[in-house]
Picture 1 (cartoon, rainbow, N blue to C red):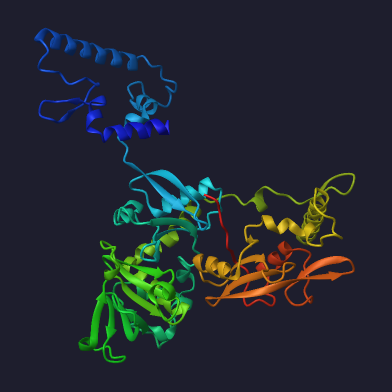
Picture 2: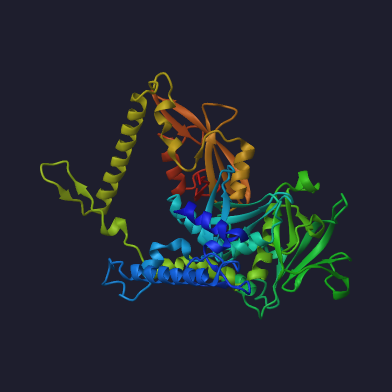
Length: 523
């Protein structure tokens, strides 16, 4: 059906095939009705009259045939409704759709046909359903301009077709679908995104602001928040970068040509954001010769020329995050907050039943008769014991079906972790760093991988304070049993799943708990 739809749409764009679906008037306009061939003036008048009569009879016959189609659902569709014919012939309706291609982290892609008014959030929902992903409101659509080496988050409310309309036809630009845990994290922890020394407001409350007050200053039009600090800037055509004092306000981005002075005569206008977007540089050092890798730029919407990019670079990751987040808030304001709370409002409007409270009951089948376990402590202990028993059986099953024995390979009977979404087996240190940075540099983003230097060990890569740290997981053998430990054997875990689950609840020796696993999906 979809192939037929594409063939019909393609034929509509060809002038020589236009008469297949519509008749041609003498003035060149299209008329509605059945398909008729254009009349030739060389035909005799009686022949043209007979042809018109034949077409009129054909039209009456089609209407009679449509009227005799039985209504399969009379209680749902009225007798005079045209829904049946529309459902039977969907390809005859002029639907405004377009085919787009979406990529994954490993550059696999999938082409889908979508309506022209689809938003970024709609596309994310579509891929979440197709891939059976958990919708935690962190899936994001990215715009990557490969020729310019820049990338940005497409906001949930933005029209994807409008984004693609600004692309050059021959440019290798792409849409990426992946996690972005930092997309709305500043609404939850704004003080982590906006350091005190970089933010000033017109109505400060004794220099101390809580989370809600800080966000209110950005969302309210009556306040005038300001981001200020030093950034490296580069002019087009020049290789050197110079450091200037920049000021970000609602009216735009400025830099001072005299130290840290904010006087109007010393501030030079750089860009405003009503017709511009903020992008991050993918390889600032390599492509632009930047002093650090924390580069970003301001790009006009209607221009794809490198000459029009305002290239900037920060000294640290959290400084770049502050500038980029503030620009997003100044550009979209309250719309970003609506994007943030909308999925949560839908969940409250249609609450789901709790499986643990309404569907599952703790039962004891150890005796001759089953009984309900009403004591919560007893139910919890039974659940833990059953979980440990299940893991032992799983490990035994893995070791028995074609795998080497535990004595031959101590790690073979613990391969159950390879099916977990947070485990990435053959991943280098640099690739792990890139994957975590792509999915959001916030506290608790993590993944586990095989160690490149020691094949028998594993590595936990974790983000904390916008920095990525790597912790080695060592195997520890005690009385013939194999355990895993992060602290040289003081705390031991039977497998990597138990290690991850423990540190999702307890920080242990780590700087923070494991909160957000880095996951990849195949489109």
